[in-house]
Length: 233
Image 1 (cartoon, rainbow, N blue to C red):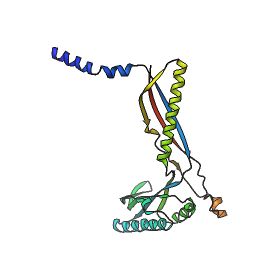
Image 2: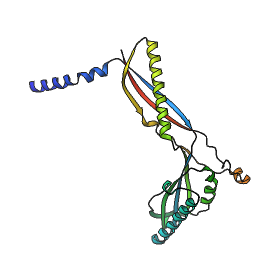
Image 3: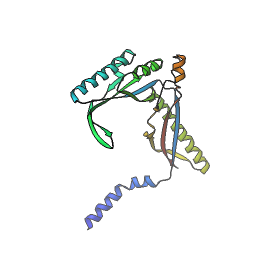
Image 4: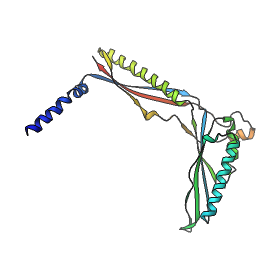
């Protein structure tokens, strides 16, 4: 029993500095800053799904479709390193007929993604891809190639906001601030991409204009949030 007591006392003694830090007077502030940037990337996501009675012939047809898409986007100026395809997947194709589920052959499916940086090619890509059978454009999102630099700036701005907030609060309460005890970067603000289902507008097709491409870029908001804990003297 005595050994257990002294062991507990030793653990408590070793942890006294940590406990003292936890209970010492401190001030916690959060700083948030936003950087607005114009997107310079479009990230396309395509789905290829075809159906047929036999798996072997189905796989051949599916490969031909994927190769035709890759050939088209390559000729449209898309860099090979900015293109990615998923593995082909197979499954049973079930359909409803007269209230019953009936298997009608099989289906093959895969995903293809690529990045567009020359926005003047948008309407050409959309028009060409829409003519390919068994292919659908799932989504297009805006991206920004220099998001790391923009996020670093937003983080520094967020720290300045936190510092100003802390000094204003301390001044109001008539206390003096010491050194920061903790600085934390909140990674929950880590996605600068904004989803947009971009479709070339009907008016754009009618006028034949290639200037706007039937979409508006707008701005991407890149945010940073920090948490700073200051010691109160």
